[in-house]
Image (cartoon, rainbow, N blue to C red; front, side, top):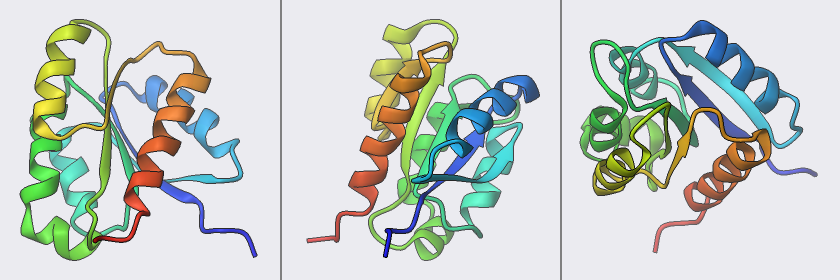
Length: 139
């Protein structure tokens, strides 16, 4: 029996970007996109009601940016009830300012920070690595 696929949320204002990520992720037998959203407020709403192992979140989104989403994931009581321990892992992506977002993203709790145009293999590795952390039983 094969393990459950890693459940992925894609959050980016650009529908074309989300579609590209979806095609890459859904082509993998061990990964499954469970939701796509165009902003951080909707990302948090999904996380409050849908089990997600890894959220791929753009650093710059309307209404609520990816760093704020990342920081909220670990502290929001409704997300913690839906996701159980350990909480959803976050891969933060950015089109610019990787150094700045790497620092603020990691301080907020992101597992990885990547450029949006990273090679598909880099994105998939980041999702799988973060998903492996999510699936480790709590101590």
